[in-house]
Image (cartoon, rainbow, N blue to C red; front, side, top):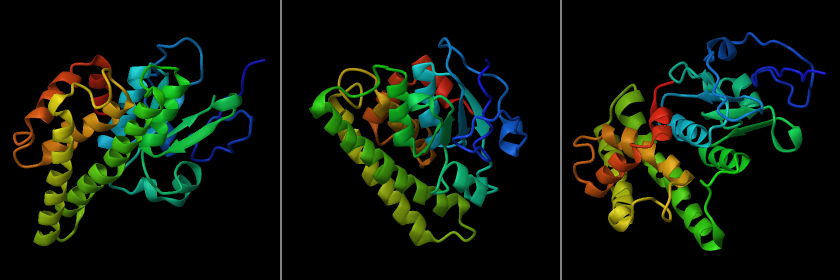
Length: 250
C-alpha cells in the first residue's frame, strides 16, 4: 500500500495520514528539484530565506546528503510573521523551518531555530558532524550558543539598523556595528590556532558559523580585512562542495 503524501506544513494536520495535494503559496513556489543522494526516505521540506540563517541549515542538508525540497519564504513581505505560518512552522515567527514527514518513530516533525534543526539533521543522518564526548559537546554548546545569540543577534541588529529601519538612526547604526566587531573579535581569537571551530574536523558548528563570516561579516565596511584568521577560515571552509552548495541562493 503506497504511503500517504503529506500536505504542506502550512495547513498540515501533523498527525493526519490522509492523502492530499496542497497548492498553497509555499508549495507552489517550492523548488521542483529534489535532492535524493541517500537511498529512500521522505523528502524534507525546507522553508527558507536568503539570509545566513537559511544558509546554515542548507549547508547541513548538503553535507549530510539528506533529501530536501526548497520552499522559499518572502522575508520582506513578512510571510514568516503570518498567523498560519506561526501555527504550522514556527511559534516564534522565525525562519528557516523544516518539516520532516519521516521523523522519529516514523511520525512527522516540524522544527524551527537553526541550532535545533542542524542538530536534528546531523543526528538523523548519523553523520560525523556532531561533537563527540562530554567535553567536546560542552564546548560545542558554548560556541554554538554564542553564534546563535551573541553573533547572530549583533548582525540582526546591524541589518535592521542599516537596511530595514524606515528611519536610519546614527546612534543605533554605530552601536550595532560596534557590537558586531566585538563579537567577531572573539571568534578571530578562537581561530588563531585552529582550522575548524571544534576539534580537528568539520562539524555542525562550522555550518552554523561559516555563513556569519562569508555573508554577514562581508556586509561590514572593510569586510574581513581586520580579521585575518576569519579570512583564512572562510577561504578554507569555503572550498567544501557541500558548503558551496549550501551557500547558493535558493
